[in-house]
Amino acid sequence: MTQPTRIINRRDFLKAGVTAGVTLSGWTAAGLEPAAAKVPLGKAEHCIMIWLGGGACHIDTWDPKRQGDARAKKAGSYYPSIETAIPGTRVCEHLPRCAKILDRFNIIRTVHHEVIDEHAAATNRMHTGRPTSGTITYPSIGSVVAHERGARDPRVPAYVLIGYPNVTRGPGFLGARYGYIYLTDTEAGPSGFSRPAGVVGDRVARRQRLLAAVRSQYLNKNRKSDSIRQYNDAIAEALRLSGPEFGRVFRLQEEPAALRQDYGGEFGQRCLLARRLLQAGVRFTEVSHNLNFVNGTGWDTHNDGQLNQHLLIKELDIALSALVRDLERLKMLDKTLVVVATEFGRPAAFDGGGGRGHHSKSFSVVLAGGGLRNGRTIGETDELGMKIASRPVSVADLHATIYSSLGIHPDKELHDGDRPVPITDMGRPIHELFAA
Image (cartoon, rainbow, N blue to C red; front, side, top):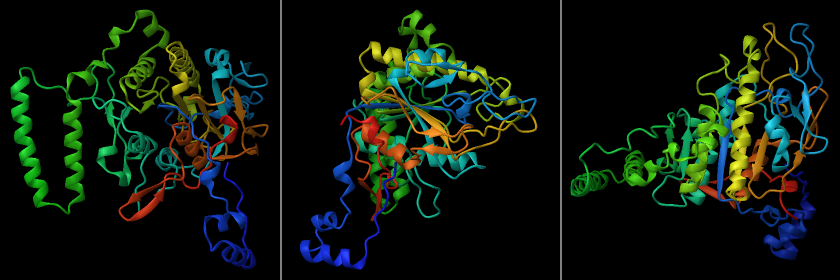
């Protein structure tokens, strides 16, 4: 939660300046203690973000309220709720597997921002932690993690997107070097990294020497071109990943058949692949849920999309619970932060077609593992989930929490040229989730 700002009057400022020479200790005396002294840093090594694109309804998943009736236009949750492993916390009836192990999770029920009608802008806000700007393109959370932590193994990328490419997931001013490798087919892996048959050994080496000479000559002629430098970085990254080691990660058939079945269908296989990617050394993997809509609309449940929303929720329940249990079995859960996020929630009232509109004033994000103090429910919304009743969590606070869990200081400054840009927009980690 963002800390309240203390207003300093002229007398306080001058007093601090005289007694401390306006040094760091002077600012502390004036009530502006540096945020760095208060930020907890965790020890997680990886992050898997599961993205529910379209706007998942919080009161139909992680923050259930009284049951409504779409036909009667009675506002409320669409499904009954069930008890969980966290006493006093209930979730939708279609999340029974997650409910049983919810003590490995934290539900943050009071995430909020002001973007309502525009999916792209809201998605950008949740990925970059900032509103869209006309003067600067901010990096996504995945790119910041790639920049700060890098890949754990040089034979794999730092950042992988299992989903369709989009600028909101991009590196922004950090440059192409910190962008993502993406794929949509879990069986084939990323396109363009496999060498043609017969191109091996000395033939590969000769080609790379020739390409290196051409790249070096062109760079020398265009020393001031940032776009050419970034393109060269992208070539270097592609060459680094074109070896057989990265390709082996995508051999899901190496996993036991029973485990693959436990993860469920295609979305579950993406989650299993995410686990294999982090085992190989990838730092940040985003898994998009429902690339090909199983309910006709995805999580954007206007009108008839509401009728089959339960298919999405059940699919999420199967894959997410399997991922958490699998990570725990492999003793990787404490080192892996799992994030389940979306661009906004949905209002309690039903629209004319029986679905729901958009709602960004209060919605839920879920964290699991990551060495956090799990089994907590952060924040409370009102009787219909429309307003925050206690403990608001801004998007910047959410980002600060994720970065802090990965050992990245949320106040550290990056640079867009000569312009310093803090990693978060004054976000503060959720202190309840970190050990005292």
